[in-house]
Length: 95
Image (cartoon, rainbow, N blue to C red; front, side, top):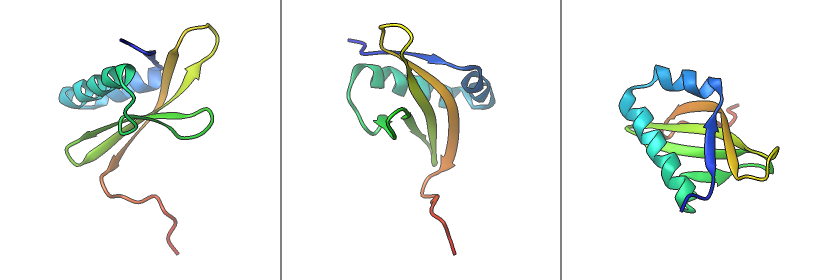
């Protein structure tokens, strides 16, 4: 049973056009899976308003940042920003 619907802003559509079709297929597969299950490896809350959809493909971790569309009384997630990061890369501050 689908728990929510996901829509993509133009930024994500443009990002998908830059990726290998196999990567896009895996991302869409994981989004579909996240819509039906509660798996924090795929879909997790980062802040009060920001959620993250994650997909690992090869040695890269692809992340789509999203928020809930609260205009209508429907469970609609809007994916609006993206980020691809090499596995193991740290975002910690260095001295």
